[in-house]
Image (cartoon, rainbow over all chains, first blue to last red):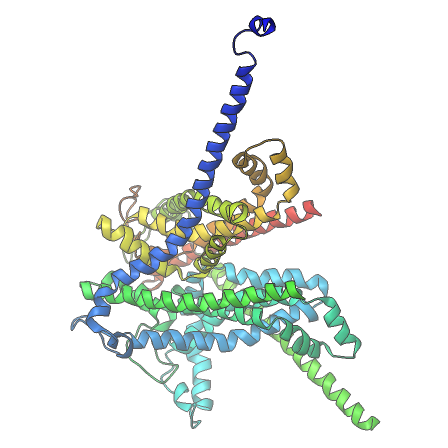
Length: 332
Length: 286
């Protein structure tokens, strides 16, 4: 009792109080930090949802005016205020398809070269160089395409194609037309160059995840390098390879500037790949500043919404396919 | 029998040889475009370089000028975009790595973020157009910066998430066992350890937005004159390059090449620096 009184009041309590206060403050700060990071995380979700909703909202006038015909008609008439998106949709799909037809086999070749064929000292520098292609801004591809590649196409490649492939029975009409240089084939080739680094780097990465014992077993049985790649590496990584291809497809569908330069901004539907066409992204980029009426603007935003939905689906498939490989790896 | 085996063996060897030759050819094909595009940019760009680029404004058709206002606009909008996008990105990445590593919400955000990472930038431009430009009633540098910030965001989220996951959990446990509150562990221990990775992410994001053109067409638009007003339309190098390259004037083409060259050199340098940081980190960890 007396010792208690001898001590200054609260001398023992004070540190206990301070510790409690400190713990309280820490708990509050922790809670605040938790809310802060959760909010930032939710913001990412909100950004994507907001983008989708805002475009749906901006395009509502076009959707309600034209209804389903917006997707199936080819009129694009700013004066008559009638808009149908079939030409840009067709152009987007065709250019992306051409890009994929070129980029997928080439990317597979590059990935194979970098994982199985090239001597080890060559692999890193070549892989870095290919990845540099992905770093070049798309506007540079566009300028190069317009000033350098289009003349080459119109003077050499297109006359050659028209002469040799034009007379063919079924595919012929695809390659008939004046050698303008600008057009869907050129745009598809430029897109292919742009997506090759994306697809090949995914393929290369997943090829590296194949356990060496699988490959070594196949080699021990006398397989050639090609047989190992085709019968062991590719089946093991199939879903991720498809994921990588879809990732490239997503890029090709949404690519804007490079395509805008070399596609020609023409609103009519042609069978020929050599004729100017249009794509969703190029239409928006070219015409947004000219959109003088509410319905014109709304149609462009509606196009953006369509592009968003299509790329969302493609990229979601890509992501799911890539995740599947990770899961499989855990099981094996 | 042995003759048949011999034949089969030869056919397999041949097939292998052809396939591997095609793979090498594919690599050469890829490198061929890289060299061609860079060479074109270099030749045309260096030929168009001149000191006026940096102190004269973008000219009207047919006359000489520079790109000073465009450079300024690009720098200003990119810096603001980094300033807006980086903190939110780091916090969201922290949420994913430290608070929601295995949760459903975390997986959903990671999924959405990966889609945002590859989504067409033109879509983000339209988003900011309806959200900011339409509400303000006019195009502005601020709207441009917000759009670029939305492109920065997923890159920073992804790298922060991945870098924090690489920090060994002993480090967290050691700090927590000393009674350090979690936010302090995150800010003073984990961020410090993940810093080089996060800086790399920010650099990669900067490289990405420096060449962005499409989304700026609907947000910052363009401005022929010197402007420091973020509330009004603002020039940027890529948009000016686009406008000038599509024009019929030779003097504008030359300016466009100069701008394209500067952007390419900047972007490639930034990516090389980012790569060097990653490489050094790998060596240090070994």
